[in-house]
Length: 196
Image (cartoon, rainbow, N blue to C red; front, side, top):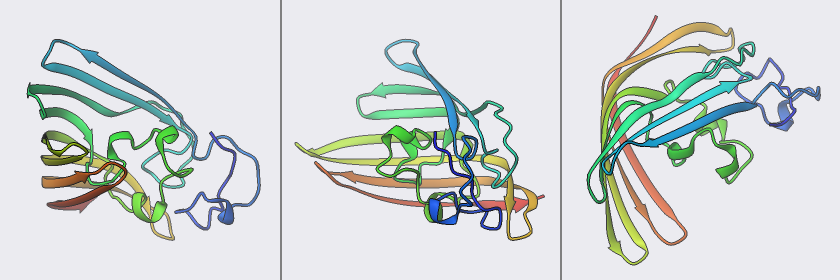
């Protein structure tokens, strides 16, 4: 948690240089619960409940602290290195997708809003598969395919016009190369976006 309140004229930033200096622990604060249940050797259920001082993903909304299930999926591991996910998942397009809202694991105070704040949809409902292969003692290649749909509330633009952003026919793929102290990741996705 941190106590900085952003200027409402700059709805995309909660960094100190754009604040008005009032102390608050609402803006940007998160409370979460992550539960992982091993059902057997091949099946795992995972859920993450998250309550926010800001009504994420709605920018500059009034705080409501209502818990939301950002992750709610089951994982099937038929072989070593191969997995299938079914349910609500975070988009795998970010470098930090595996721990998107876990601030303790960030290399910075919060993810850069110019990268992580422009995504219209944070999560999707669908299916994904991932395969991780060891190329050398400290080199791994991971590939994934994903597909599904989503509908999320969103506030955007200087007038704070409210909208609901949806995506259908989502298809995408990621490729990640992990070394000893570095990571290279690429992603491509397509779908039909709409607003209501």
